[in-house]
Length: 371
Image (cartoon, rainbow, N blue to C red; front, side, top):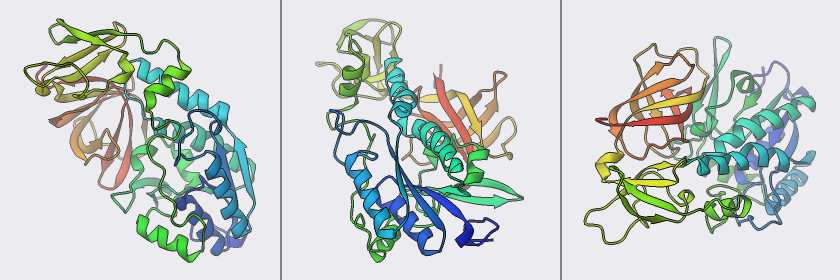
């Protein structure tokens, strides 16, 4: 068995590496090439990098494709660029805009992994005769009793498991994450040792297709009429002012709401059907329950009804204790042990048991504490 857990010598094992042009995936390609694997680099062009939505530091744009190609040439491995613009627009950008227009908070990086990368690209890797596909994600993969499990990355500051909750068991069987037990600092040192031109390249930031001007400008450009004005109301239904489009607001937002209020007000929820922004005092942000839709469970050791797990609904937040309960429609109810602020429909909620990623789903609805 080789270092990737495949029952053949590395020299006879073909690995497709998803190369974004950044440090992480470049190091993965270099590591596997050094170990003797037959490495093929594949880079996706996900959107028109000459269009107005381009931004410096975005992945899968012009400079990153060039950087990936340079790394592949320096390693002497084959490299292909695949145009997935239409797939990306349909599966990720349209969902991003639809979710905001519905008054919810999207997580496009999860959608991208769920569809374009781990569905379409993985299928291409199989077509190329690959034995596995490797990525630069900071997550770990472990096989127990013949079943692959997804674990948090060893570096808590770089752990990307939140973004991979929608990975299926079949996909996880085919995927490999060589950087999962390393820190970012260790990866950069490896990049320097390999002499990679991207060794000191900054990490990509935020959402790749959103420019510095903000996501609202992208939505306005691609969905004319998305910023229709409407009412700002309090929890009792009293009109307090006007807004310039609900896409400019998120749950928990305080700044830029209303002037001259005696007490601070926060966005409590967004009513897309009525085109209203509902505001209230901070205690009204406390959420005690959430209902999940489109759930995906990776681990068969799910707690029984009422079982305690840890969850997060934002990628960077600490884990929080919660109880899971299955619903008749196949969804899941999550009861928070302690009410939390900032939970919004559209976000992903991911469940953990120790290091293991159990799975998760998309927040369809929330319930305020004391409601």
